[in-house]
Amino acid sequence: MGKLISLHNKRKQRNRKALKSKSNGKLRLSVFRSSKHIYGQIIDDLNGVTVTSASSLETNIKKQYKNCGTKEVATIVGKLIAEKAIKKGIKNVIFDRGGYIYHGRIKNLAEAARDGGLIF
Image (tube, rainbow, N blue to C red):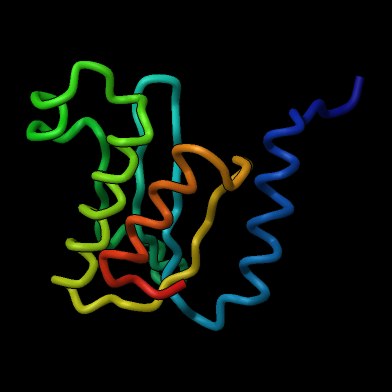
């Protein structure tokens, strides 16, 4: 039996390949979501390091909301990642949605990051 790759992983690989060709050395805002939480991190692919990150697991967010898997929490995480990036002098990034559809929590995080000052 050959290698079995899920449809999600195929979409993720296809999306990352397209981003790599268009990136021109820009940093990448990568998003991961689970059923309970959402995570965002800005990655420097040239050096292989995470510059900054934010998630719904941060103490101030987790204390405030009982359910961290909502659109409202995704908006807060998007604002937080944008705020941290601006403090480090990062404005231009490429949005990496992974294998997720640009809808719901992913869309809210992206729009909040744009409103916070990130350009993508």
